[in-house]
Length: 454
Image (cartoon, rainbow, N blue to C red):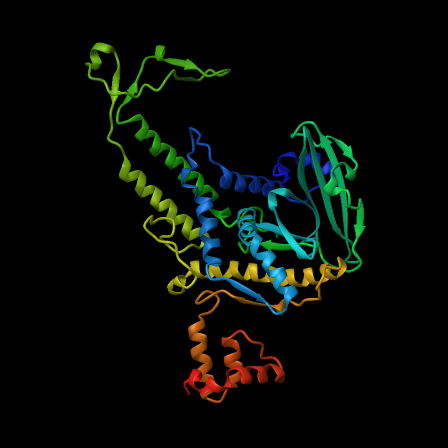
């Protein structure tokens, strides 16, 4: 089973099957396809060589830095179970969101726990939005292959005017992977047999999925649609790929270029254009006047190419907001969140933005899974609030722990803060009620004065 990753290339067929039209602009549709093509492209063409994999480098560095010192603890067993499942999908979901601008984390029950999948933007059709631009009607697809038969499950999620979510499922079967084929009963695939054709939830839960929206301004069509983290650098990335292809070509061909007669050329299929019959860039010891070939032999332009490539990479860093040197200086080492503390400017702000994006998603997931857990009667499920998790990003990204601890101690010394609150914060203990403060005193009061150094 795999999510059908070519939904955007067969958009019109899917729109007919869903019975609705995608409201995404044509500019955004083209851009989404290009973002994913740039990220997953491996094959070199005559015009471009994607060997530097700039989109992957950008997405990977942001993700690794954001999660370098991340930890999340639940305040009860059910919250901990939800967080554990999210940890398993965190990197994949973050990658999907950074590449396509939008991704959804989809929870579904399995036994007495939730498991999650990540739905990327190129696997979504958006049929409706609210006044804030948030999708309220979407369609997605997933593919299952049984023997020689291709089954495609279409799932449409619609939030009605009453705020209730309705899910509609349709199954199609085909003998080919490039068409939807004809409708088939859901029972054709055992794991879909229990799915209802249509179901409306009894209480509002939004789309029943958690969105990850890339916090980057839309530079494609100016709409509310989120865009890829490297959307503004697409043109530069193409230039880098062309630069790499040209540089590699010069090295492969060597220093000599030959100007040859027409008998060494042939026509392309169906074209009047003449091209070289073979790679004829070779060194010759013979006298060119004797063989009738004129040799053009410039020096390899290594330094100029490398200098231009470095400048391109610096421009990508500037547009995206990466710390200068992370792409353009190959000797730069990987950095953890704490090491980024000393890095001022756009890069630090970018990491903060993406950490907040994930933290908001985690807290939304807690609320959603609490509601779904009660509906599905998952053992131990309870209603959860967003603060049911204690999330720590480490030092110096959202805050500097050591500096905050120093400030807390100073406030205690000045009589502005109760010691129990400072110590409770230090050990991630709740301090909201008198009972919470009493628990801190019972556990840490014997050593409190020494810890506070006041």
